[in-house]
Image 1 (cartoon, rainbow, N blue to C red):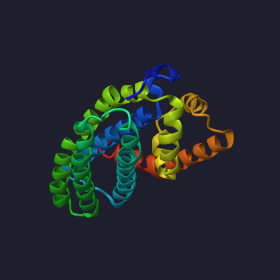
Image 2: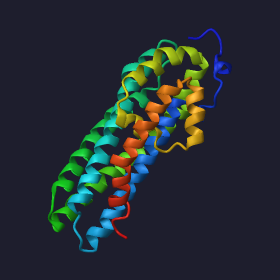
Image 3: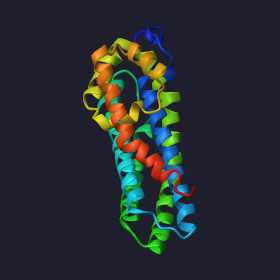
Amino acid sequence: MAAQDHSSTWTHSLEEDGWYRAHVALRADLTAMAGMLESFTKQVDGGKAITREQAAAADKYVTTTMKFLHHHHANEDDIATPYLSTRFNMDEKICADHKRLETLMEAYSGGMKKLLASTDLQEQRTLLAGVKATFAQLDPLCRQHFQEEETVAMPLMRKHFTLQEIEKNVVAKILRGMGPDDVGDYFRTLSKEEFRSFAKQEHIPFFIRWILQWQVAKYKKNIWQPFEQQCLTAAH
């Protein structure tokens, strides 16, 4: 256990922490996917099948988002939890939740693949009902899991480790494993002011900031905007 409380070494709030910001991005993704399912339901119930353009946009967004969520869990399991466990015991429920979440994520992704591959209206209606039932389990469990990490694990991390220790032994390793789409998803919901503040907080050099912004712009153009246009306004 830590010999002293290191909370004072953290110069930014918990809500500004990179771990917390990942949850903000993922919660936005869950909200977007819920909106997609609701929009598709109205469309299909109205007698109009999901189009190939909509299916392509939805598949790209869902695939990217689920990959980001999977990487988030893997980073916790493989990098954060082993390191944090050297000074405090991680809540067993938080660790166990990942197995249940991964099972639901696999079921949801598989159901979406089948739905988006179908061109038959009646089959889409049946498959959509199954996907919605799976998502109805995945969504609240994800949100509850994020909240438990924010209220239990993150305060303990700040108590038992200095900011510098976490930056060196956790954050740096996670950043090296982030792909362009992960970066785009992570930063999509941040305003320009929030991005600048985060970059300054994390000591990100100007040139790297430019690369990150370019990746975010590319993500928005190729993944988010087609999804938003094709799948969140499908019923209108």
